[in-house]
Length: 196
Image (cartoon, rainbow, N blue to C red; front, side, top):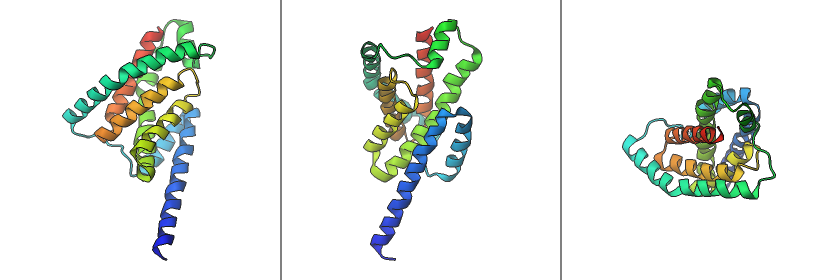
């Protein structure tokens, strides 16, 4: 087998793996399947699922990125609420607003379980897979687009896109998903607080 054939086989395998990773993301539409898919990819992938990193350096990087991008996220969230006022919010937002309260199980689900599962998939598996194939810039961009689309709500898509970029940059710079999980959890907690 010549070098050109070997390269073609490698590219084909990487492309097939990337397609599989994207398809696996659709399991977020079926929440009970998400942990199973995460476990399968966690076992077999060379991804950025690293919970250890230089703690002090990770905090410094995270704070710098937040100082730069939190105002952008706030502006986009505010601006998109005016442009997209005809669209309905997510069902979970509607139920929290209607009840004017939230259960402990819903808080745990939105502020703990969802950030862990989503960050392991979007930043740990998807981002690192795309990064290996086509580089960091496209990895952050494509994983952020997919992150915003998978939530199935045009009203929050612009905000989630910028949040995805923020979390992706932090995951790449810190080489860990832990800061992204923490920030995602804080973001969801802040959104719950603002809804109530």
